[in-house]
Image 1: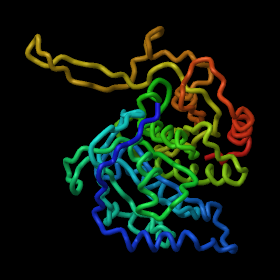
Image 2 (image 1 turned 90 degrees about the vertical axis):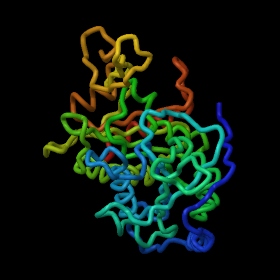
Image 3 (image 1 turned 180 degrees about the vertical axis):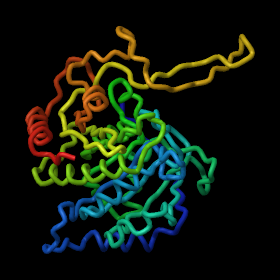
Length: 358
């Protein structure tokens, strides 16, 4: 059930009136017919569940967002970021039903990304969104991924980018780690994409594998995925394949050791588990406190880790090394055919026959 996100107050960390006026005027300026960039004129809202901090050495807190931002802008898109203030991994489709959302515009971007998106119509601001009635502080709680998308579509983009009737596409990610099989239900990256199609906006959720340990997330994986994703989006746009009837989930294999990603594969969401959640009692014995621990699923035959879906995203990605694409719907109703079958067939044909290969 869709809920109305009750926003009592939105406080910007920088004065936005002049910026908004400039963005409105810029949006009304038609694109140059001489432009050869494939995404020229495309307005993209970018969010994730890893935050916009990009401060951890493991690259697990938003570095992928800056790689896809760069790739989309390089292809000609106008990208605005409205992302969680803190890491929100595992939040799924959770929303916040009360309180105050505050935007913090990031003016100093991570090293190496400072000049990306220069010259776009909106100025391509990067915002983090926290739950606070004043400026976002380092320890401020965060908006959820779904919060950021719903807020952006209903209020934020009009107020801060001058987009009265946009965006054309929502992109979420690039997530630190794959979102496959049963973990799809937990994923804030996927949840944010679902929030977009709920509002009638096409959406793509991007997730990249980590290294062999799945505890570090190499820049090489993010960068390869970003290049692929920009070309993939360009192909969808060229073929008029954007749709809000379902979101597309695109997962990318580990290529950090120099291997190449195999051709995109059209997959189903698997039913097994990849990440195992465990709850370990704290000392002393009899304590009512339990530590939450995460690890790769043990995969014993017959346990919940065993994958039973023939064309599962998890096995196609992790065991066979393919880029995987799967359609995701909002209702997740078992046994019910979604509408848009013709669109589904056309996109499957694009993925398997025409999409970029790496």
